[in-house]
Amino acid sequence: MMSDDKKNFSFIAGRISVNFLLFMLVLLAPWWVYSAIIVFLIFYFNPYYEVIILAFFIDSLYGSPAVLSFPLFFTTSSVILLVASRVLGKRLYR
Image (tube, rainbow, N blue to C red; front, top):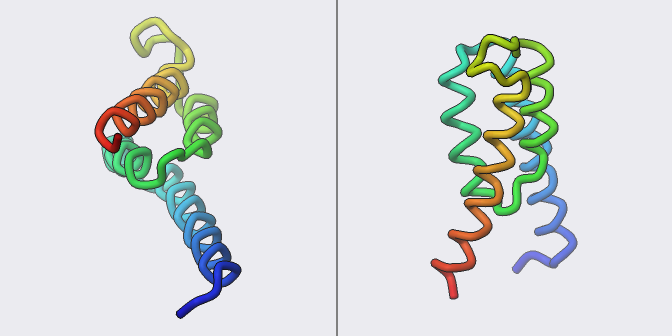
């Protein structure tokens, strides 16, 4: 049986490695690949607040005012998905 410190360390190390891999995907993969993975991770790691920083990075790197006439499209979408996952999680797991 693992102690709580080892469980917390392995959870945090896993989350850091997932963030690093996702950051690399943002740089190397097409937008639909990392977008699908981000949606999955929002529901897997609840709450996944790092997605807001990553979405801001995506908007800074690839965003333009031409995307639905809104410059922070990924950031706004990730905040909406994060809030929706919290609400759905509370309603589903009561």
